[in-house]
Amino acid sequence: MSENDKNQENIHSATNPEECEKMQQKYGWKLKDVRINKKQEIIKVDCIFDSEQTSFEDSRYDD
Image (tube, rainbow, N blue to C red):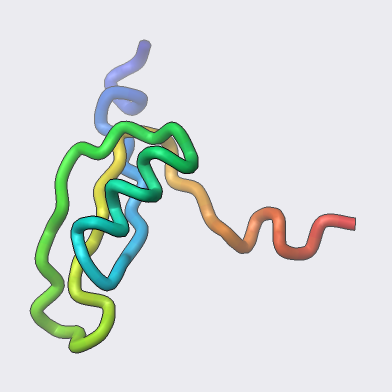
Protein backbone atom coordinates (compact mmCIF):
# COMPACT_ATOMS: atom_id res chain seq x y z
CA MET A 1 0.00 0.00 0.00
CA SER A 2 1.45 3.38 -1.02
CA GLU A 3 1.52 6.47 1.18
CA ASN A 4 -1.22 8.03 -1.00
CA ASP A 5 -3.49 5.03 -0.36
CA LYS A 6 -3.01 5.41 3.40
CA ASN A 7 -4.08 9.07 3.29
CA GLN A 8 -7.15 8.74 1.07
CA GLU A 9 -10.36 10.15 2.43
CA ASN A 10 -13.85 9.63 1.07
CA ILE A 11 -15.93 12.61 2.23
CA HIS A 12 -19.72 12.83 2.09
CA SER A 13 -21.96 15.30 3.91
CA ALA A 14 -24.98 14.38 6.01
CA THR A 15 -27.62 15.90 8.24
CA ASN A 16 -26.34 14.20 11.40
CA PRO A 17 -23.70 11.72 12.64
CA GLU A 18 -26.19 8.84 12.60
CA GLU A 19 -26.42 9.18 8.82
CA CYS A 20 -22.65 8.67 8.65
CA GLU A 21 -23.10 5.36 10.48
CA LYS A 22 -25.82 4.36 8.01
CA MET A 23 -23.53 5.11 5.04
CA GLN A 24 -20.79 3.05 6.67
CA GLN A 25 -23.10 0.05 6.95
CA LYS A 26 -24.73 0.46 3.54
CA TYR A 27 -21.56 0.92 1.50
CA GLY A 28 -19.03 -0.98 3.63
CA TRP A 29 -16.82 2.08 4.15
CA LYS A 30 -14.81 2.47 7.37
CA LEU A 31 -15.90 5.65 9.18
CA LYS A 32 -12.77 7.52 10.23
CA ASP A 33 -14.19 10.80 11.55
CA VAL A 34 -17.27 13.01 11.69
CA ARG A 35 -16.58 16.73 11.35
CA ILE A 36 -19.08 19.41 12.26
CA ASN A 37 -19.87 21.72 9.36
CA LYS A 38 -20.66 25.05 11.06
CA LYS A 39 -21.31 26.82 7.75
CA GLN A 40 -24.44 24.80 6.94
CA GLU A 41 -27.83 24.69 8.67
CA ILE A 42 -29.14 21.45 7.12
CA ILE A 43 -26.05 19.49 6.08
CA LYS A 44 -24.46 19.68 9.51
CA VAL A 45 -21.66 17.12 9.31
CA ASP A 46 -19.01 15.79 6.96
CA CYS A 47 -18.53 12.02 7.18
CA ILE A 48 -14.90 11.07 6.61
CA PHE A 49 -14.35 7.51 5.43
CA ASP A 50 -11.05 5.69 5.01
CA SER A 51 -11.17 4.91 1.28
CA GLU A 52 -10.80 6.38 -2.19
CA GLN A 53 -13.15 9.32 -2.89
CA THR A 54 -16.40 8.22 -4.50
CA SER A 55 -19.30 10.08 -6.00
CA PHE A 56 -22.96 9.13 -6.01
CA GLU A 57 -23.04 10.74 -9.45
CA ASP A 58 -20.79 7.91 -10.73
CA SER A 59 -23.73 5.55 -11.16
CA ARG A 60 -26.48 8.06 -11.81
CA TYR A 61 -26.00 8.14 -15.57
CA ASP A 62 -24.96 4.54 -16.26
CA ASP A 63 -26.21 3.41 -19.64
